[in-house]
View 1 (cartoon, rainbow, N blue to C red):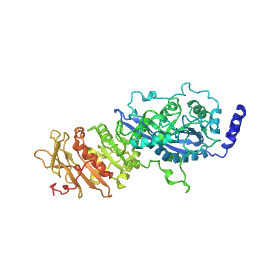
View 2 (cartoon, rainbow, N blue to C red):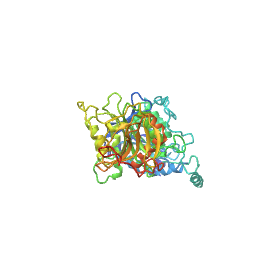
View 3 (cartoon, one colour):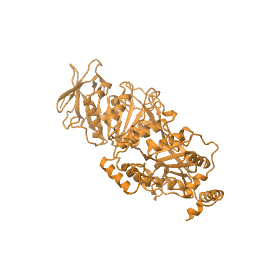
View 4 (cartoon, rainbow, N blue to C red):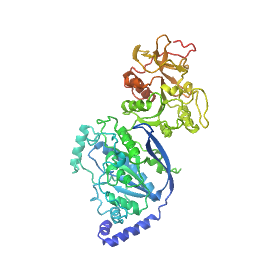
Amino acid sequence: MIQIIFFYLPWSIRTIAILLIQIVVSFPCSASEIIVKTTRQTPVSGFQNRFHRLQSDENWNTKEVAVIICDVWDSHHCVNAVRRVQELAPRIEALAAKLREEGSTIIHSPSDCMKFYELHEARSRAKAVPVAANLPSDLNKWCDSIASEANTLYPVNQADGGEDDDPVEHAQWAQTLKDQERDPRRPWRQQIETIKIDPYRDFITDSGNEVWNILESQGIRHVVICGVHTNMCVLGRPFGLRQLASHGKQAVLLRDLTDSMYNPSSWPFVSHFSGTDLIIDHIERYVSPTTTSDQFFGGTSAAIDPELLLPFTFSHDHRPHLAIIIAEDEYQTAKTVPTFAMVHLQEKVRLSFVYGDTDDPSELPGLEAIDDADALLISVRRRPLRPEDLRRVRRFIESGKPIIGIRTASHAFSLRDGSKIQGLEQWPEFDSYAFGGNYTSHHANEFAPFIERISPSEELFISKGSLYQVRPLREGARVYWTGRIEGKEEEPVAWTYIRPDGGFSFYTSLGCPTDFEVPPFQELLSNAVFSALQLPHTNEVAIVSRSKSYSSGTGRQR
């Protein structure tokens, strides 16, 4: 009844009433200064499609923050999308409630649902905001791309609409929607009720112009967007990331409070959640920075749910996190390893890449990505590091987490002659400690080694990379593959090792570009990663139970 009376007040009186209510309800809110870590990706010098993922600490005043909740509808034509929204909604509600009380502006934008909210005070408030003097002329339309995305390959094929439902379930869901007298293709009517709307503080709109006017009228400096679906509405709506970023707004995606419309049966044929990650990568590279919702739940209050202090994850996203450090100039692993990982690992594993700085060999920009990784793959060659970066690597390894090393990882963090560089630290014992190895040199490049599996005994392929001299290994190293050249003793080329800290290690001295073209090597490295992460193997032949030991001083097999 109050809403109806309010709606039929004369427009001038209603506008004044709205403004007075806004002033009154703003007093209890207490703004706060917070530090928000935002993430953006910048190109690695000299490489196409390789990026440093960099974090920045930014000081934000919550009074200058707006949260746009994009298309978190009460229903959808994709039943899996509905299920994921139902998981997302409580966290979005918690975020909105927290920031609202700290003076932030909350904008609810369930597109195509404005008729439902015609009499809602928050809808009236949005319409009553004065037109901004700097309102762009082209803001109230869908945006498919912006200039910064030109000449880029969009990371997923969404031509089929992105539905990832089981066909039988999808048909059953369509019938359910019909039974509810909803259009099975456009069944949404309102925002999901889990997310509360404050009638006197919040705004409701799906208009790009109205969103812009609200941001200007509230003095907003930081626009945080959450909701669905990242590759469609969150990017393309008139109030979406592309429009805001292209018109100069500091828009940030909440990457943990979003979802994509991506079908794993479409290119690039990865899991649904990996498809979302690829879209987030695209956004960080070409559209806007991202952050996570846990950044806004600070303090030490016992009332705070501990789960709010971690980024949100979907209950069906069981992918472990593999961080990959690539910093070597000899074997092109900045090209081969990412391609291998995306083809062979990304369906089961969440990937992070850390590339060495091509201008400063001691720099590993974005190394903090390893902090929450479950395993670490290392392809680094003779790179002394800044003390804090080497401590970060040591901390990861000494925590007992699994590591995988390829080729030059045996001499990753020390110079050949033992010389020192001021301000940098080395780890000459890394090979021995981390892999149980003993790299000293390699045989001449012109001798191509025969690579053999021990059990079942089989010659696999001829590698075009030189054969590393690594004997004797430390006690406990279990060798699965060996290499031999004419007239020389065979050398281990792939083994596992349990480190002094109890962690699992796998190392292979293979890893030249042509090795990555050979299926047995692809299987070996895939299964090494899956073993480290305790995932099912792709087959049963790459890593086997029987092995040889090369830990004696003579280097003889025993």
